[in-house]
Image 1 (tube, rainbow, N blue to C red):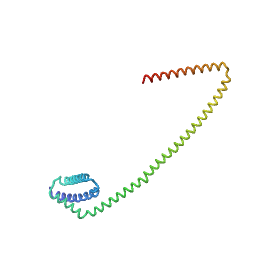
Image 2: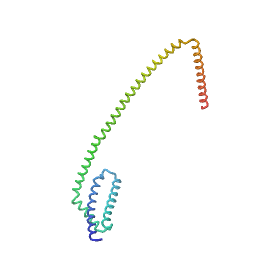
Image 3: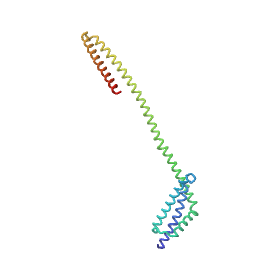
Image 4: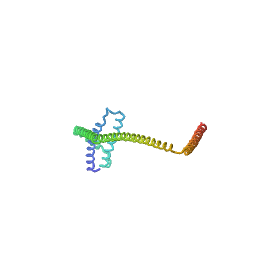
Length: 210
């Protein structure tokens, strides 16, 4: 390993130590240990340390092909200590400001979405339902009225036709009346026989089924 590679490795590990401090404080800020179950905290801790180890090894591999030396750990501790003493307070304040900004922006966007999109859409939906119900009821009332008028007209027309047929029947000769009466009685008798046959057939079918 050349001197320049060693120097670059030390600088990289110092930066990674400081970055580890940043990520550790960020992780602690969002974890809320007291509000979570112990096994969840344990799994999160294991995952955090595994990810940090992989990131550091990846950077080390890019710098010196993954060669591990004692000064690498010293450089990591130096970077972490420098962050703790010089940058931690500033970063935590900056992180708090960023979180407040994100919360404010998300709240603003949520309220804007509710006022501009959600409430108008819900209002239009309710108005559409009201219009449909209103016109639907009006249409049903109109149909009922038309049906009543048609039924009344039909009764009047049938009554008028019946009166005309009655007058026409009275004007017919007796022979024709007798012929019509015979035809009517014969037809009524045949219909009654057919009806009785159907009833008997249905009763037999029910008996066989039982």
